[in-house]
Length: 368
Picture 1: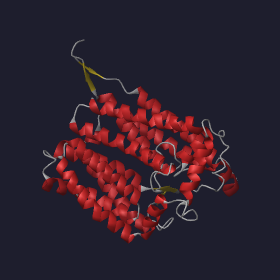
Picture 2: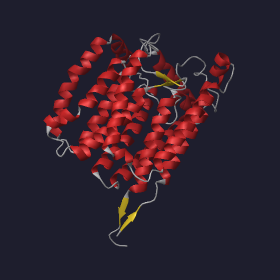
Picture 3: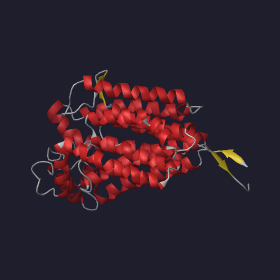
Picture 4: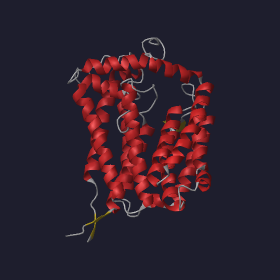
């Protein structure tokens, strides 16, 4: 017997918990900075709430869709086209922090690369799940991947090496899930070696970050500073932390404590218990996403949910690793939690799509 499955309430609960936790930590990590810089301790929280309101509307709209329009090839191509156009527009918007990553929309800064990640997953799910009959037909595969390469080149040009590598890992994961033969992955590895070398060669700063990652104490005054301060923050938290709002590292010691290193503040204020709670929430998000993908009913939907789930969890894993000094410093926000409207919106859009898929999945009961 076949029955329609109910919406995944656990995934909705995890999304709500992570988002609510983000509100608490953003206020905690920014209240002093906001008071001194803007005269309003709620400044960052208010902006985040605006993004959250928009994100919640998008989440609800997508989650309640009666028809999975995100699978329609016309919408997929429109989304990819918009992603490419906006990634081009950033080069006309001026530099911020020595990179072209943001454009202004109604007074708010939007980071197109965050939404390009979703566009990539939508597109890969379509070509690998519906358009391309055999993923091991390398000629056709490379032809279909042209939009992917265009987006990657534009992101690398910004430069945003972190997002570039993240999206490439997503490609590898989805190719594996789609059935690409193992021997081709060796070819990809051989190809990426020289590419990564050229990236580092053209960006000496990247090499300095790698050296600082390998020996942060030696580069404490420069590129190792954030890593050392982050480890101090987490280490000082102990089992149960110094208490919500009592972080000292957020007092201008740890740069971008409210975004790129918010996990460090979680560890400092809420201790190992609080940090592990966040890790567990993302682990449950992963499990629910895998379960929804397994029961999604089509190859395209399966690849879409797998890709989106992995996108969220991989970003979280990189964020954790950077905070713990296990990965070179990169500006990868913690989904649902870090301050940053583009990251929050993209995370809620992803959650909305996965929840909507759970409404349309079908469960088979052999003996009922």
